[in-house]
Length: 236
Image 1 (tube, rainbow, N blue to C red):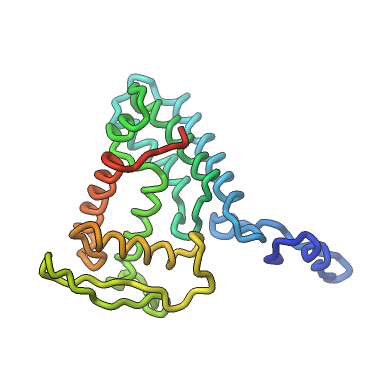
Image 2: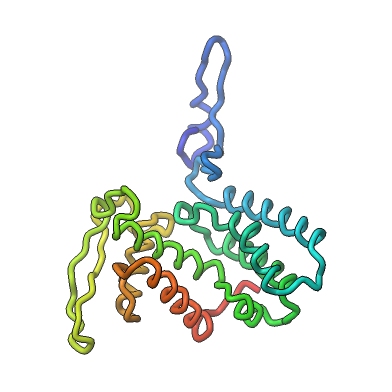
């Protein structure tokens, strides 16, 4: 694979091995993630959505329509959403890809609940829109990295200083990027998560240094409140 946006570089990058000419590929699959030569994630997301629909249609054919909502929801989480959100801290959707994800989520929630309104169906199921859920997963991963759950040198990529909150009588860290080739891209996990963590510290009493179990629960409640009060899904 040649990482380039110009087709000419791909055409001139073939190699000869034992008399056989090997041409570069525009996309490869590595550990379930489709990596494109232009470093965009549309191919990966399209493939995952295709797999999700195939699994969803199999479930819909196999499971009776009068199955309890709780059971349907657990099946969708286990067999559909787990495919869609696999390794989601690596990739990030653009607006068009996000729309495709939300359409998928709208269709599967119609099978779970008979409620006509999409937002109400999501609240009944206790689900977040894909955009918010990806933010949730990014912050959960940052929490695990900061608390050294994984052997990864997170402070080689981000740094922090503590800022006073006089009205709240405590301090919270402000994160910034230490090492990153890009400064304006949502495809970089570190850039995304630094913005999310700083915004979380400014707008809530949560800290990314909280114990993992309580942090996950409180962060999920925080995002559900955002969805209920301010977040609008304009794709449907």
